[in-house]
Length: 251
Picture 1 (spheres, rainbow, N blue to C red):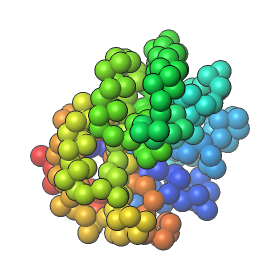
Picture 2: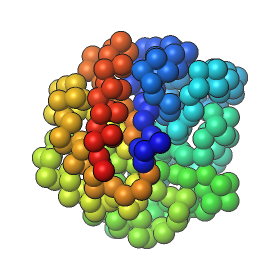
Picture 3: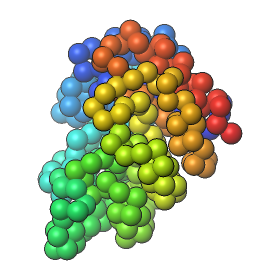
Picture 4: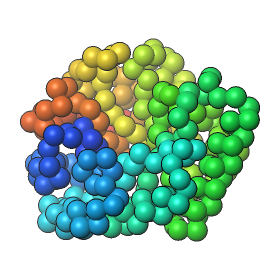
């Protein structure tokens, strides 16, 4: 196995059922799925989570992560335990969460202190429970720039409190490369797509850019296809082939 583990995010296909997604992932040669907590794998539906776990085993698929919509600073911290239990039922110890509800440039100093305190609390829970929380790298959250990611990670300093990474489709390739180079030491998983603004394109068209992005990372990482053209699951085979081509081209 190379240093990149290839999979997909179930939220890419919200119109499809978990079994359809698992079968399609297996047919496309993918081995990992990040399960979204909004549609496919709600943390309150234990029966559904157990069913997904059993179906994964049948098709040789593993849960890479639990893609939750838990927002540090907004969601009650007590709810985190439910998501942790959900992750365990799915068979993963990596939980995607969101850092706040505002972009970093809209957060005042008092709000930032409160948010950081909540992040410390979440990190302590993760350490105690033996799971890893990974912040979504996204606009309209505190972790929307390389500088704020670095600031947060330096402040929390926990191996159980990490980052996702994805390019910002409204920035240049050069900006995104600078971003991943600065944040790379904190990144555990990557969301992979080919967008320009709000337009989606085949991943194969962005091979050069993605080879450059992934070359900035050291060690092993999970790379997950997300939001493909037309939200059409029939395109997964070609998108998965493009992802493998990219990862196999990165030294």
